[in-house]
Image (cartoon, rainbow, N blue to C red; front, side, top):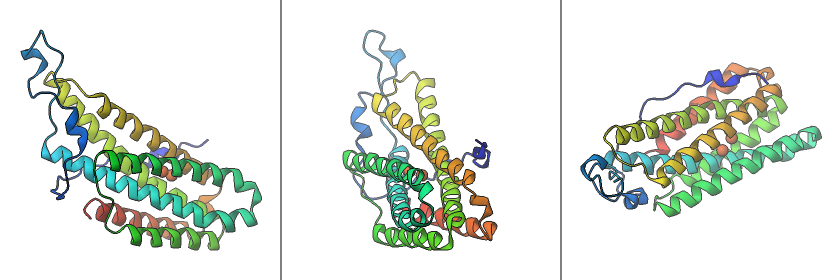
Length: 237
Ligand SMILES: [Fe+2]
Ligand SMILES: [Fe+2]
C-alpha cells in the first residue's frame, strides 16, 4: 500500500480560548500541585491542568466529535449510490463507516464524561456533510474516494496536531517530576488509534482511484479548504 501519509504534517499548538463552559473532568485526576521530588515518601503527584490546557482539551473534544459526526454522515450519504454502481466496494464502505461510527461513539462518551458541549453549529455540519457525501457520490466512485482522501488528509493533520500538543503537556509534567494520569495517557492512545484509522481510510481512497477524479486538484482543494474552515469554526463555537 502506498505511503500516502507523507502528506501529513504536524500542526502548531492550538490557541487557548475561554469557552465559557465547565472545566473538563481531566482536572479531577489532579491530586496536588506538589512535584514528586518534594514528597519522596508519598505517591507521585499530578499537576492540575492550566486554563489554557483545559480550554485546549475542551475545544479538541468538541471539534473531534463534530468531525466524526460529519464522517459518519458522509459515508451514510455516499454508500447507497456507490455500492449500487460498484457492489465490490460494499465491504470497504461498510468498514470505513463502522470505524467512523465507533469514533463518534468514543467522542460522544468523552464529551459527556468531560462535560463539553457539542458544536453549536451541529445542524449545519450535519447538512453540509450529507450534501458533500451525496454530491461526491453522484459525481462517481473516483470523486467519492477523492472526498475521503481530502477529508482524511485534513483530519489526519488535525489529529497529529492534537497528539503533539498532548505530548508537549506530558513532557512538561515529566520534566517537572509530576505523574501523568492514566486518563490523560488513555486519551493520547485513543487519538493515536483514531488517527491511524483515518490514515488507513486515506490509503484506501487513493488505492481506489481517488486521484483519477476530475478535476482532482479542484475537488480535493475545495473539500480540504471546507474541512479547515469547519475545524476552525468548531473549535470556537
Ligand atoms: Fe473518524
Ligand atoms: Fe475517517
